[in-house]
Image (cartoon, rainbow, N blue to C red; front, side, top):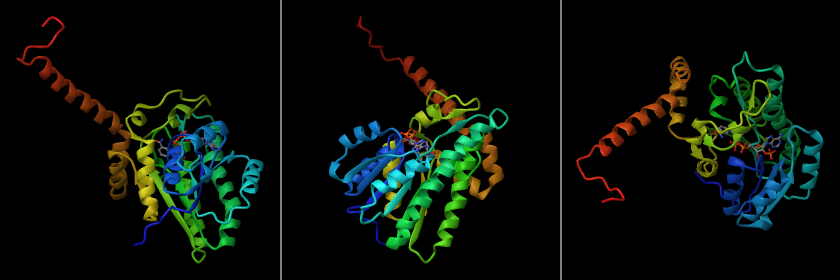
Amino acid sequence: MKTVDFKNKVVWITGASSGIGASLAIQLNQLGATIIASARRSEKLTELKKSCQYPNQFITLELDITDSNSIKTAINAVEGLKQLDLVIHNAGIAQKGMVIENEMEIDRQIMETNYFGTVAFTKAIMPKYLDQGHGWFAVVSSFAGVMGIPGRSAYAASKHALHGFFESLQAENMNCNLDVSFVIPGFINTEITAKGLCGNGKPFGRVETSHKLGMTADQCAKDTIKGLMKKRQRIVVGKFEVYLLSINRISPRLGRLIIKSHPMKRIRLLKKKITNIFNFGANHSLEPQLTPNN
Ligand SMILES: NC(=O)c1ccc[n+]([C@@H]2O[C@H](COP(=O)([O-])OP(=O)(O)OC[C@H]3O[C@@H](n4cnc5c(N)ncnc54)[C@H](OP(=O)(O)O)[C@@H]3O)[C@@H](O)[C@H]2O)c1
């Protein structure tokens, strides 16, 4: 199968000001793509541009996907572009809190950004795709987009909704050269959980340990690009947590049981115990210990 060569391709990435989006922007630019990097924090995009390989192929655009005027302005700003090959719907926010604790406003806010914002931006892009006769959306979903996760109901719902929307969009446009890829990351070490909304609307404030120990954003972008080059429809990225998805596919009941029992926490505790045992062995070895006195 022919792989996609990103040289001379034009790629629009939403949420490119940090984390996975920023890494994708830098790496795709390195491959020769022209990048339209958008997000609300334009100063972060300007910084990012300074570190890219081909700054003359790096357009930065302020864009809030929840604001229709902002979408209109951004689309108008790049109207002159000959082609648009790929849109990576990466902008998103996280949520943390049990269903019972979440104020309804939080559910709405998460849907507003992750789902309605992405849908609104897609509708604004579609005329260009239909006009040029081809188009490709890569939707950054999540582990939580394919299975429910405790404490992430609104987030999981917003990502599940994206699957329904884009599968339908693709089915509607079977004869129009429209491709859709879903990127499904596990735990990636970014600020997303720190900014994630708690039940009372306040940000969580710190990066969760599962994410701190997760894959780096650079590695996530690298693996995502590998999948995009093969035009995969489903690109699963992460460390060993991704095996849970396969288990869940075979047996959703088993998948639920595992996810309920906080497997990552258990694995971390087990690792700690094993390390302690080895450290204990090392500390009590018969070899003389090196101290400043000997
Ligand atoms: N990190 C993970 O473990 C993980 C796992 C699965 C899926 N994901 C998904 O990966 C994507 C990127 O997240 P990340 O982990 O890289 O976190 P991140 O660093 O917080 O990136 C989120 C990006 O979304 C942008 N954004 C948020 N609201 C926006 C809005 N209204 N309009 C435009 N842009 C907006 C942010 O930019 P501004 O604030 O500058 O607008 C930021 O660039 C998200 O869709 C997330 O759900 C992440």
